[in-house]
Image 1 (tube, rainbow, N blue to C red):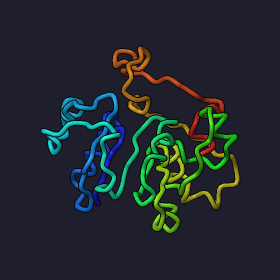
Image 2: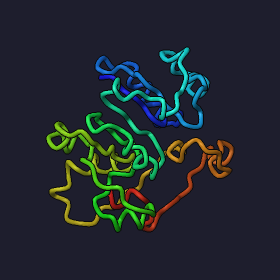
Image 3: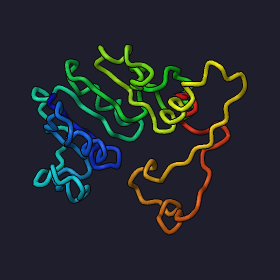
Image 4: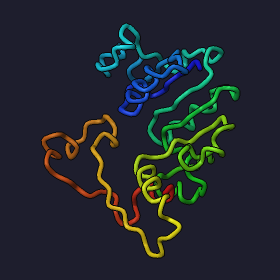
Length: 205
């Protein structure tokens, strides 16, 4: 499938390109990163030797006539803006949160702004039959994936509350520099964040 990746300069976009580069069924035709358009892909992701000599393009320059599938690797709230410009025949997988939630009130509470809609939830280990014929897929969040897959095998015989203690690295916060996420601040340490029901993956889980 002729594939485009939009938002490819971020951590998720870079990891996605690494996976696609070794996949026999995908040809990465367009690699877009708005603020890095014109820059070499390897200047941002030096490990992506497969894409040496190629540059990020602006999304406006993508010729959709030559694209079968697009992955959106954008911050929440950004995917919905771009979807309207993509032809309906092109399949879309959104790695962001824009189309994961069913309840507009949950979106407003946890993310803010208008709810863009709901797409098929793309967790194939649990929902393969629902996914297989769809053209619009909402990729699950990281915590939601880890929690859902670990609990699913035992959920039918648990009769009490479930408490999850999870930890991740700081890449989930994106590439923007923040003092509290610098290596010297986080090395050898843990810090809690967005607890007490405020974490955006709560309604998704």
